[in-house]
Image 1 (cartoon, rainbow, N blue to C red):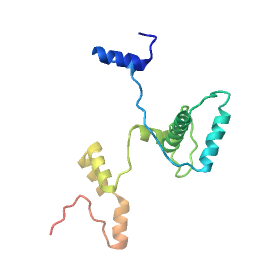
Image 2 (image 1 turned 60 degrees about the vertical axis):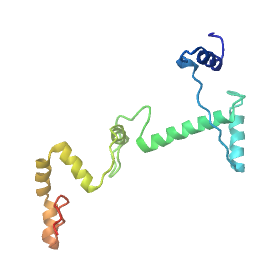
Image 3 (image 1 turned 90 degrees about the vertical axis):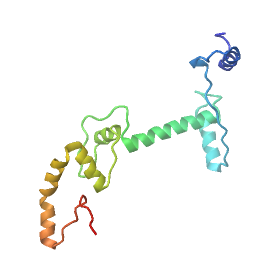
Image 4 (image 1 turned 45 degrees about the vertical axis):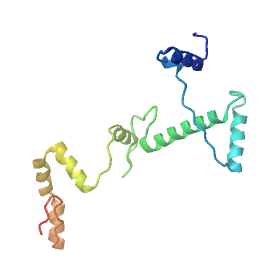
Length: 161
């Protein structure tokens, strides 16, 4: 049975009541239909011409799959600095966030948070007493209060009314 097609093997196994082997699983297939522009058709023809030596009988679904894999890899590279060989010494520029830092942030799955959620996360990581001591010792808050006469409301204070 090793020389038979995987689909035939899976059908035979199902008829006998056996579990299909992992190598005999056929990938799910989906029908896709859309109306394309002339530019799209021209690009498909150009891809087929460029692949004529390496893959003379390349199918449309293979072209799409290769294009989507390349597109996803490019987006990951840009958004998450997901590269195969990261630079050892990134250049420092003003507000530029080095790719190595973006990579670590992405890998740890951190997200930007609003002020109150950031405070909550800080309390969780460092403890409420530590965060409150830092919050009370902010010199810029005291300066703003002295200069304007307006104190920023405490986000943790309860509203009475």
